[in-house]
Image 1: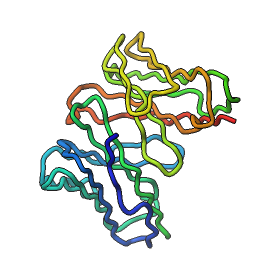
Image 2 (image 1 turned 30 degrees about the vertical axis):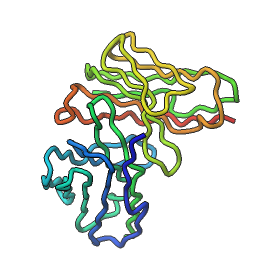
Image 3 (image 1 turned 180 degrees about the vertical axis):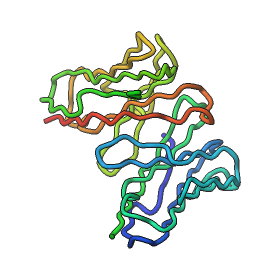
Length: 111
Length: 115
């Protein structure tokens, strides 16, 4: 099946630090989605990207759709304790009936 | 607005037992999905449906069955539970085919343990 590779797998950072994570694929995606999952809950959409090269922000979060259409990046600036959770990249391949998810980046923020 | 509701939240099954995981959404979404999330892993698509009466297999359909008799409900059936089916199951829905207008809306999950 399709694989979306996320890195790093986990991160331990200090409150106030900036965070970067990325997602790569061997296939071309036309849409990239970034989700956050809080413990015990379902994933929630953070940012959606629709065009190669697109840079989109949502508060302290900024995501970019890679030029090759095979990667995407998520940055979080000035992290706070509530940023703790698992961040997933996702995208539809071939058709929008099937969304594939990466294995996630687990973020831990020390106050 | 309840969104996507899953029941039960937790369940423990013995090997060989069967059960149905319930999922209902009140947003009139056409598309519904079932994912499983194993510890430390991403979400794997089990089955999906593009509308009432239509279902199709995802990445990992073996051991599961689904039905979609109404727009609102998309139950997932496990006929002969196996330890490999221990996982957290998420139901999701979206309104349109174009992902630009239809991010997935997730329920809060059902944590299933098979012993």
